[in-house]
Image (cartoon, rainbow, N blue to C red; front, side, top):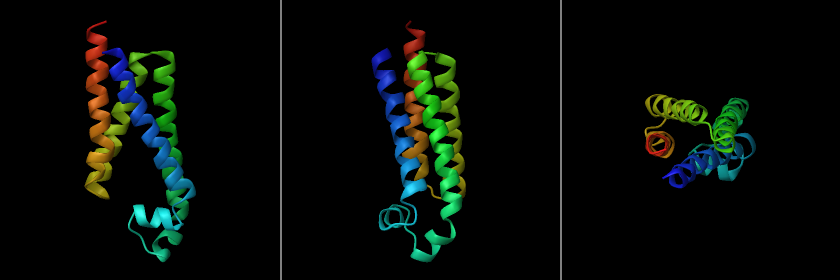
Amino acid sequence: MKIIAAIFVLFVALSHVGILVLEMFYWDHDVGRKVFSMTVEQSAMSKVLAMNQGLYNGFLAAGLFWGLISKRFDVKVFFLICVITAGVFGAATAKGTILFTQAMPAAIALIAVYLANRNA
């Protein structure tokens, strides 16, 4: 179960690295505009904000990697809860699908981490 939990946490961490790359480096390019359904004007006006968001997603990924490397239950739980909170807030304020692309994978990983720790 520990391996399965680690795989789920790794998936969430890597997805946040992907979000970092999209928001920091591809927001104002064709790829970013397509992924986030924006016009050229929208992406140009919000580029700096997106870079800031990307940096925060990088911190979430870094925390999850730290939890994986250190094998610390508390670190993994803390950062997964942060991801879930960000996903729920993003779904409520920006785009509903964020609940499924960000919060749900983190919730699944959190359940797996709890189950793996309980069986330890």
